[in-house]
Length: 79
Image (tube, rainbow, N blue to C red):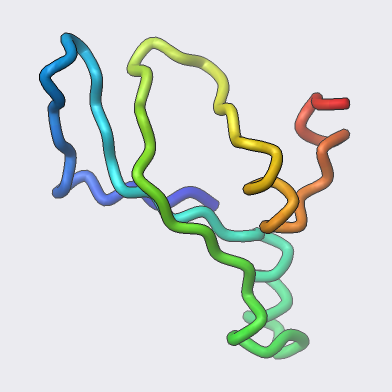
């Protein structure tokens, strides 16, 4: 799940560059926490400032973030 804090949108000096603070979580971990099957302290979360491309239709994540969150790269269309 991606949470974007829209109250902290910052415009940079570069035309059209928008950066926001994002919080990424492993959705499967979240479901397990809700069901009481995973300790909330083990929920994998990654927070960072992200560059937003307002015309983009896809999201790109660095491989180390994908690995940290425990995501399956094949499911993301990556090899």
